[in-house]
Amino acid sequence: MTTVKAFQLVGYQKPPELREIPIPEPGPGQVLLKIGGAGACHSDLHLMEAPAGSKAFPFPFTLGHENAGWIEKLGPGTTGFAPGDPVIVYGPWGCGLCMNCRVGKENYCHNPGDIKAGGLGADGGMAPYLLVPSTRFLIPLGTLDPRDAAPLSDAALTSYHAVKRSLHVLGAGSTAVVIGAGGLGQMAIQVLRALSGATTVIAVDTSAEKLAIAKRMGADEVLVSGDEAVRRIKDITRGLGAELVLDLVGVKPTLTLAAQVARVLGHLTIVGLGSAALPVNFQGPAKECSVASPYWGYIPELMEVVDLAQAGKIKMLVEHFPLERASEAYHLLHDGKIQGRAVITPNG
Ligand SMILES: [Zn+2]
Ligand SMILES: [Zn+2]
Image (cartoon, rainbow, N blue to C red):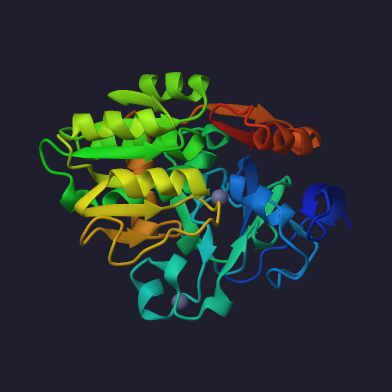
């Protein structure tokens, strides 16, 4: 049996390990993908640090839930793709049969026990090959390079979904605040620029370096997190606050700031996994401000994200790492030293 190296999570609060696994064989309807890139996501860090018994994941499994590559082999009876086709993988794999799955919202499958994401419980893309259970999770990449496109499937899709669901509050003269200018934030800024050209986009972060990138990505104003940022956002919005506030961090200071700058009838959207609590009662946030915590995005939205990338309207800053340096990539991510997205390239 031929084996390959895979970067696997072996348990909670244990460092991931490079382990030997067999190359999977695609069954009927399945596809074997040769991985171009697998993004290293902040949520993996949360997973590694989670207390024992947090979620019933079957260890060990291969990390990497942000995947793109080329079709290597089709299982018996699998059609619609040919070996060599560049594709990106939709991450949350639902049952395929419930109402939400049938409209492409597999991230909200009615049978949550059936959601198996490669890299989050099932084997993911930090290995030379990834077994994808169905062609419905594959979107053609056209001229995009899978090594650079991988983050579109999570960093971009998650931001895109969070912005798109709030487009109706972003009319002319509106303001959107993006808290956290890392990989997701940089995407959110570009998506806001692409979908809502008349919106003033304000980025908030603690890192001057990330704010400089945010500016390059199209933010109109960049602010260092803190009380002064709150005052400035109030100034810009004539005291009303922003129509949309995206918190891509989710820790106490960012949620506090978000609640201070979201306006009446606005949207406060928590995407970050910081897991601090936001007090919501009659006193705050602002009246009729909707608070939501979306998870990932829909299959048709991933197609739209790929279209935006192909049109050159969104672009991820990508730093490539060979599989042997996956552990280092996560350490850099943990220390805030990755400017955009770290992408593991198991096939070079
Ligand atoms: Zn992720
Ligand atoms: Zn379903």
